Length: 387
Image (cartoon, rainbow, N blue to C red):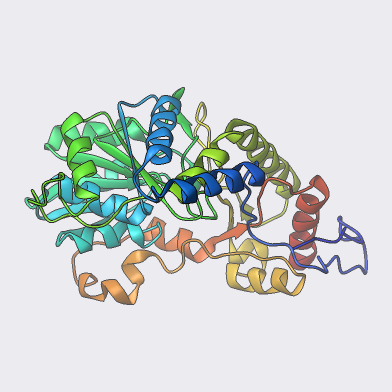
């Protein structure tokens, strides 16, 4: 969809700077469509449509990029999370954030495990190690944290809690392919991490995901598990599922990897432009990225203080929509407030930072190809609406 230039990106007196053709929240991009088309033709002619050489190449290139021993391509991040937990032979409770996409908790529940929600840190909005320690119980077997918006978790804090309490540690890294923490790529932390390659992510396969781990046994069980638990002799070793990635999706992901660093640099530049343009607007706060870390900025989120801003996140979203600017309320409601998890609400616990973040969070458009004028126009629209 072509976006027309702003009439007045700064929102001068009496103006109404609308994005007449609409400004989408995200715009998926694959660097070389012609290359993908040629690869698709070669795949179709080969007759090998799934779990073939393109999948193997994707796994090898991803493992090299991430600096991990094993990558296992899967049909989606959700199936990857389900499979990782199943292959780990867990029982009881798994601690998860509630300020996350529902798939984090869904993967736990699908394995017959019980999601146990813990609160988040107010700065980066990622799972709080202190809050995790407070909800550990006798039935807790693992922690499943999430790198929210592409911002890395407090990896060391979570690892220390896990080690002190004899727990497994996993990460939902759906947003974080290319994020770095302490100079290391996200992907090799904890027992395993799982990435998403769906259309709104930084690496795009149309649909797909990737499990990354340095655990040889876990990697082998995930490889077997993605094919129903069948190692090849049809004597299934455990109850797996069909989580295979097709060759067509792998070819798309490989093309998306080719200019990843360039696109991550541009996403960070655009995020910096947003932060500068929004500075000084009362009631607008930006979630923190810890010093020394790099976010993918899969999403650029703001937190809207209704008292200081004069309107809440829902009202701001509606006003921006009238200007043709698409937004999302990631993550409202938080998982613990969803109908699907009503049975867990009676459990002891409160999540005040999660609830406050969910009430205030609003994700703004960000994608490679956006112009500085468009970023300034969104910020100008927010300033005008607030005024």
